[in-house]
Length: 182
Ligand SMILES: O=P(O)(O)OC[C@H]1O[C@H](OP(=O)(O)OP(=O)(O)O)[C@H](O)[C@@H]1O
Ligand SMILES: [Mg+2]
View 1 (cartoon, protein in one colour):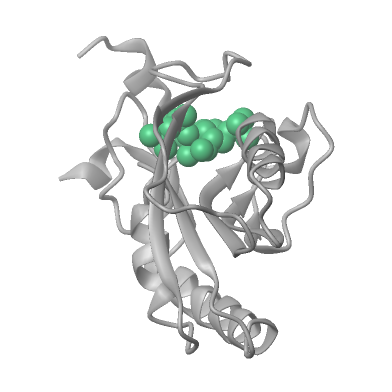
View 2: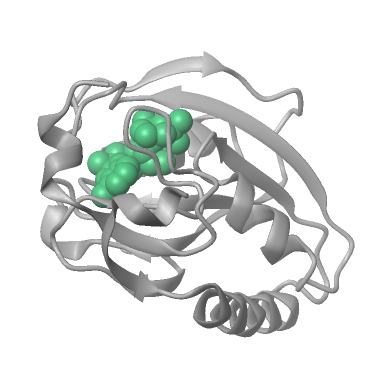
């Protein structure tokens, strides 16, 4: 049903699963002697994080934070707002932030600085998608799944007006979806 709104698939469910497994193996090796606090950034990170943590084989804890800079818009407002903070004290912890996408970099840049200010021992980023052409701040993820072209993408957590997060692959919407107002 949702597929009818998609113009083009960029990454299939199978490609994403294989890439996630690869990332999980790297993270397992890098955190072998640590117990990271894995922080998912709501809501987009949920599908990827759910899959990724099952591919990481070290003791870890999970927490979630909700920040928003997009709302319903296609471009970032530039202002990052904390909607829900962590339940966990990050002082001395090894943080692994999980995201669905890094675009302008503003959200992640804000969070990295925040966790450093809160005295985390280390802060690393893993993102399913990286859109380097969208960057307005200098930020490089420690781990990423795919480089995406400079287009608005949906699926696997990524939304347009809060929809399409449950699409089991990443794709580009048909232009008429943006033109219609439903
Ligand atoms: O690099 P940036 O330009 O900051 O963009 C990336 C952020 O924007 C999206 O979140 P959004 O604010 O749309 O919240 P959502 O995850 O609930 O959709 C996405 O999930 C990232 O968190
Ligand atoms: Mg969004």
